[in-house]
Length: 169
Image 1 (cartoon, rainbow, N blue to C red):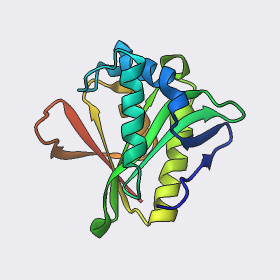
Image 2: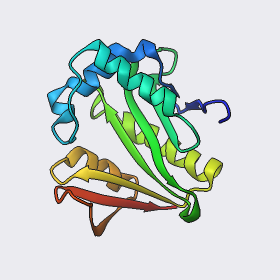
Image 3: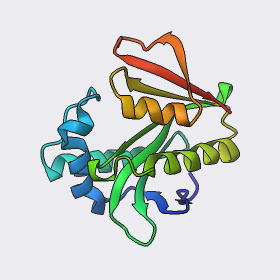
Image 4: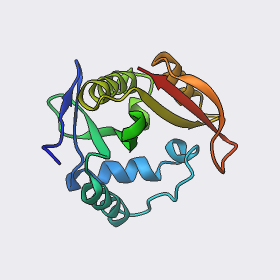
């Protein structure tokens, strides 16, 4: 893999995740509000967060891009956004994201997502980006609709509570 891509928007810098992000990753992965729509086991300790970060760092390649979202000029992680599950033959991948509660409703994720979508399209030739969100996660649904993702009729395998959204670029 080449150097990890740092992406910059008007207000934010999307950089590589680091071990120094463990306190914020613990906040993200242990917060009940953030995790209520995610089917994952919450992190309980800094060690859990560090293990997650180490796993991401070890598995980063041209098939996984996992950015820490920071305010430009500050290094503190306020959220994450990732591209994964690349299908080279169909020029398709999936996007995922999460944001600390105190940064919700400030336009952070739409700005970060637009930059990541642009990167995926221009750098990797991606034509289709999928996203899955829980049927009750109105914030995520609204974000995806603002980004011009369309609801797909496909059932998300093994989980009737998830809705599949698709962006065709």
